Image (cartoon, rainbow, N blue to C red):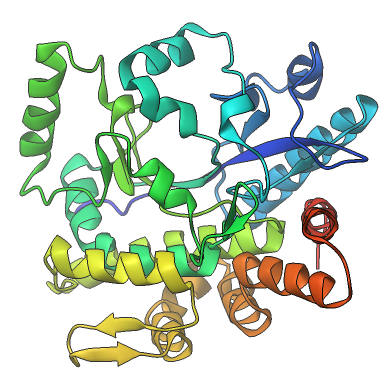
Length: 376
């Protein structure tokens, strides 16, 4: 029997920098990123826009270890940002910012993206959260990616944090995806029958000169181009670290569950991307509020019921990986509402209390800034 995957875990998050007093977007001042990353060997880095900061945990053996490292990174970014009169927020779209006024980070990778993507690149005022899970066997990586695609809408729904765009209520729970999906090589991944087929497909595009390597493939889940991992990229970034960790644990446990099924010659049914895409849209539009389609039953099922089914499916895996409490936290996200739901509630409560739009949005942003280092 083949050796079990390591199921190591790593979390990447992207943050926005805002001024402490106005909560408007701020450009990262010279020296901030360097101060944050001192002694960390690249765990804190600039992102596509100068108002963004990216962090990445080490390769962690457990979710508990990942949480500790991510908490340390968040605290470091918050502490050094305060020295410059700034605060970080972990949200996929700033509620009021205008992408027209943002400045690209002056790095060759980002300059190349700007050249390649033309006008599409200029709207990329969005942040996400990525989860890497160690799957060393390449064939298994592709097989699990095909099956895992079914669960991507569930993760998106729980993570949704981008209801506003340029001062407007978009009506969506995750407006971020409407921006990101304008890029090429995004969305649900194709179904590949083997690692060899995946490599041939990528190499064909590389050989044309269209992209230099697989890092320019941005599917909702992909084999990492740099690590022996599957990388889940569907999620909005979460304001609260406990929510981030819960979603990372769900990714890790779901992949272990799918691997465990393979040990007894079972597998998750692979549905056409057209069907999964419909659930992806429902998650993008409604978050957890309107349910997803259960393809076996042929009807829309409330999200609370789907979540309990998922938690039951992965209970054995959560116990084996030591993250039962972390996956159970998904129930709390559902009970209090996603960030998108909470942002809308805060905005309309402020408006009802007499605030104008500008002050109501500042209320939302104050809450997002406070959530950044909240531990409960």
